[in-house]
Amino acid sequence: MIYNGRKIDFYKRNQSLMKKIFCCMVFGIALISCHTTKTSSGNIVVEKNNAAYLNGTWQLQMLFASDNNWMHAPFININLKDKTFSGNGSCNTISGKFTINENYLGFDKNITSTKMACPNNYEKSFLSALLKINRYTLNKDELELGQGDIVLMKFKRN
Image (tube, rainbow, N blue to C red; front, top):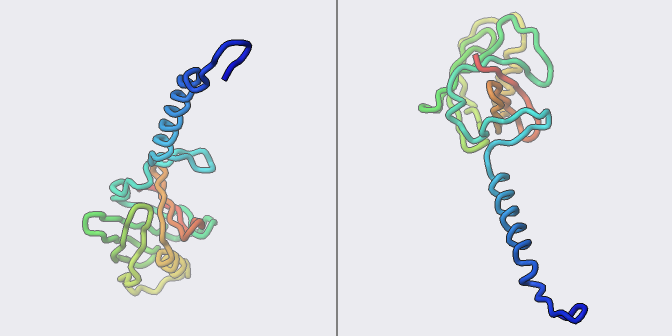
């Protein structure tokens, strides 16, 4: 190409710029592939795929997008090594197994429970929701359990 009587090699002139753009693209892709993301509320999610952080006891804070007036708030104790959980559904002791894979978390339908008569019906809702769970999200000391894009339950580390 000739411009005002001077020959300009477009590629050589823009080679430095192209290298900078390429490096920025590679850096951007590397950043996106990290496990830490921001939620719509602006909170930083603690490595969604870091299942080891699930170990421990989690107390229910919310079921089906509302605060419930529990006589005793349900909780679950997750044991990743054995892939089992135990806890209390508000009235009865519960236990069972679960499956986990990346962001997938599913509770086995064979949940063992004591059979005490309970004054409210919230426990049935809690157990029903557990069986619908197919994903989890960790957000510091908060655990969200959901079905698809819908958050069914929120727990706080106890």
